[in-house]
Structures are given as C-alpha cells and as structure tokens.
Length: 377
Ligand SMILES: NC(=O)c1ccc[n+]([C@@H]2O[C@H](COP(=O)([O-])OP(=O)(O)OC[C@H]3O[C@@H](n4cnc5c(N)ncnc54)[C@H](O)[C@@H]3O)[C@@H](O)[C@H]2O)c1
Image (cartoon, rainbow, N blue to C red; front, side):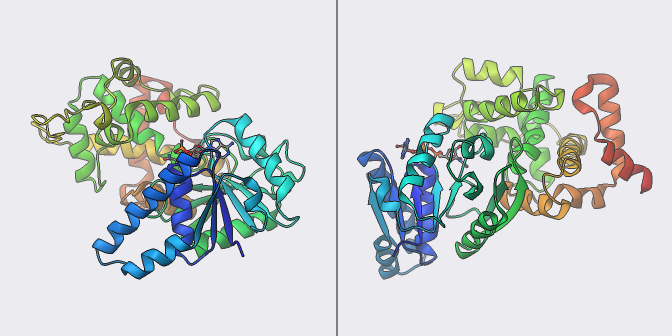
C-alpha cells in the first residue's frame, strides 16, 4: 500500500519523501530521470546517517525508513496513493503536464498537491480534469527539518482537498497553515523586506556587517545579507523579481539594483566564494562589523516586515496568528510580525515608515490597516 507519492526527486522531493518515510508512511518517489532518483536516495541516506551519528535514530531505523521509500521513473507507480505531492522543476507547462498525466493514473479520490513557490495553484489546476482536487502544499527547505507547510487553496480547490493536505502535513509532524493563492503566499512575501530593506541600506552605504550584526542582535539567527549569501544571490534575486512582477510592480517589492549588479558580477555568495562576504580561506566569510550596530537598522527592517504582514492580513492571505506562526516556523524569525507590533507599538512602526516615505518615497507606503491600528492603540 502506498500512503503518499512524491513526483520529483530533487532537493524538495527527496526531503518530502524523507519526512514522510520518517513518519512511518509508505512512499513512492518518482522522477523522469534515473540519476535524479539515485541522487535523491543518496541525499536521504546522507541525512539519515547524520541523524544516526547524532544519536537521533538507531541504525536499524535508518534501514526501515529507507525501506519505506520506493523509487520509480514511471508515474503509474503513484496509482494507489491517496495524495501525491508534485515537486518537479518550477515550470508551469511541465507541472501542468505532470498533473494531467497523474490524473490518468491515480484513483478518483486522490488529492494532487503542488509544492510550487512562485506559480499560482489555480494556474496549475486549470488544465486538470478535476481541478477541485488540486491544492498547494508549500514545504520549506530543508523539508525534513522545517516544520511549516503552507496549504494553499486555489480558486478551484475543494475544502476536502485542503483537509487532506492538512492531515497529511500533520502526519508528517508539520504545522499546516492555510493561505490564499497569492504571490509568495505568506513566508516568501512577508520575508521580502528582510532582504530588500537590508539591500537598500547597503546600497546607501551602510556596511553589510553592521546591518547583519544589528539583525542578529535583534534575535535573528542570521543577518539578511549573510543569508542572501547562503541562499545564493541569484536565487534570492529571482524570488524578488518574481514577486515584484506578480504584484504588478508595487514599489515596496522593487528588487535591488545592487543585488543585480552582484549577480552580474558573479558575486553569488557562498557558492561562488564571494558575495557580501569573502568565503575564501583568507576571508572565512567573516561577518563581524567594525562599527557599532544600531537599533535603528533593525527597527527599519522590522517595520517594513510588519507593514507587509498588515498588507497580507488585509488582503485575507491568512490570519494574524497564522502569519506570526508561519514567519517563526518557515523563516526562523524570533517573533511574528504582529508580536513585534505588541512589543514595539504600532505608532513607532508607523512613524518609522512615514519618515522613510517622506525622504525615500512610495516603497514605504504604510498599509491602511497599520495606520488604523496605530490610531486605535
Ligand atoms: N529549493 C527550495 O528551496 C524550494 C522550497 C520550496 C518549494 N520549492 C519548489 O519545489 C519544486 C522543486 O524544487 P527543487 O528545488 O526540489 O528542484 P530540483 O531542481 O532540485 O528538482 C526538480 C526535480 O524534478 C525532476 N523533474 C523534472 N521534470 C519532471 C517530470 N516531468 N516528472 C518528474 N520529475 C521531473 C527533475 O529531474 C529533478 O529531479 C519547485 O516547484 C520549487 O519552486 C523549492
């Protein structure tokens, strides 16, 4: 019996398969490429070895987990799965084809989920024969570690598909959060200002290490520029560009000219040896600041994050409580945006944005609901 099928054995597909098998589910992992399945399986084995070495699981359990994952180059092997998670490359046409092919093999009651980060669930569902069973299940990288799953309800999605996705996420030990089918869902959208505002400051001459130190002092595990170096400058820029485009070029989301020049110069971060920091043997990726960190830096970045959370809330993307939970679980934030409002005060956040808007323009336009919240506080 198959409990879940995962299509695509790349970074995410293999991670989702590992999470499911670790939770005791029988998994089919399918991919077009035999080598991808081999790589996926090796990646899972390596992760499990790490868990064995850290004493988290016994050697025997590793074997059991691996034994619950069967690999296949044929979608037909997904036939018996009550839920299939698609995690193939981020290409609408490829995804649509996977869904139509899946519909030819799975049972009538099967739910089909997509792990897309930047496409709309409705656009993927549109060409399906039964679009009502197509739902988004947006996992985070690394999937075996990250607890959040954004469960995305598209225009066609039936509530029964949403429930199946939520139940499955819970069986995997994850926290599902319902979000509407809007660009970037919650986490990739509300986290944009974390990078963009830091990049704007770096563009205006603030030392990168000073920005990162200020954010670490504010409780973040990593500074935004350090994290952009880790994610890869090209990957981070591509997400920003996609969100900017999909929100019809609202100034808040304008990507950074500095970041684009860095990508063009090959300064991609850790993977290229240099980004904001130098990762060569001499550089050690040293992220210490020579200047005093400043609370103004973190207030500025946090104010922009809170503003975006208010926009998302008033557009009905998710509840305030879920936005807070999503940012803590999906982005490792020390607090949720609305918890910061409690701590810092809506009026301080609004004043910060209004003052930046008067000097720097519309990127700092405050959400009307934030203004109301400040007025009623
Ligand atoms: N990498 C991340 O951090 C991340 C996080 C959340 C969501 N996502 C989303 O997850 C999806 C997968 O991303 P990834 O980073 O794992 O990509 P990846 O490139 O690592 O893996 C994609 C896999 O899909 C396979 N594939 C391509 N066409 C296929 C087809 N027709 N049928 C079956 N398999 C096919 C490829 O062989 C490859 O193994 C994308 O939609 C991405 O946006 C990625």
